[in-house]
Image 1 (cartoon, rainbow, N blue to C red):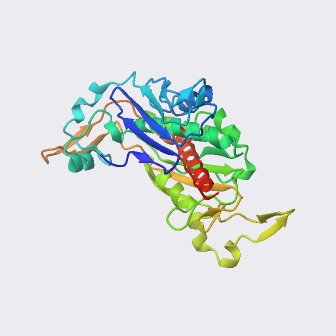
Image 2: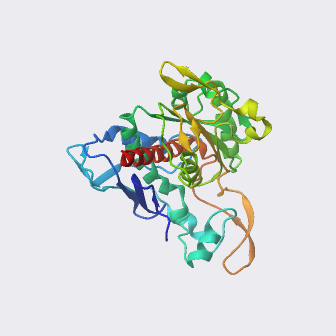
Length: 358
């Protein structure tokens, strides 16, 4: 199976399945001498882990990370940084009834068709549990970005039809970590939590949007023509399980504007070139311009729901299936650290690419 590596100079290769012994990865491109703040890395994993609140899957995994190479005396040696997180609370028996059944809108049918074999236990490699490796690599990337003065802040801006209308600059984004849905608007957060809990009780699922802001950005990250910064971010985000859309800056709303309305006019702030507006989303010509980069990532409703659904089995027989297991009614609260991780990896890679030019 191809497609298990991401990045050029800062590169993650991940492995593992939802119900295998564990998941893990190898990170290349980590700065030699980088202090690996293990508490911070574990904290990032805790933000992603299951069982953290009443509106997430009740699967109880502590997701403790174990580094097995590339670190000495708390610092990265610059050699491949390998790590593993062991699975502790998998219940594979919950999936026995799905061994020969294709779940609607899941990866079951395509995996079976392409490879001739699939791991029906929680989806195997197609499970969002593989994103653990992304979060670890993203946490290490964030430690590298700290030294560059760059911050990555994600938050939930929409659940179903409950949508945030405030601009991110009007909000204190640190408020997002103070509630279980990770929305920085406290009043809207309560509405979202109530709504998701109702969906959970009805054995259904709902989608949402994770927004992300990259601040402290320098000028010059990203490479034309095929490696534009927004193109790399789009690839990163669209590789996340359940993602259906990506937009940055003014996004799709730009089609309703005239050029005179959309253009970001420049002005001088001391000796620094700034733009009065930022509809470009901090990226022009595929290269960062020093303004905030901001984008949105749309997530579909989780495919596995505990309702009767029409489908077919491996023999082609049409049947009615009822799934079992433990699943998120809405993925976006746990997806925030995943979105941040992928963005951090893209930026770490871009910084390293820039250094090769010098």
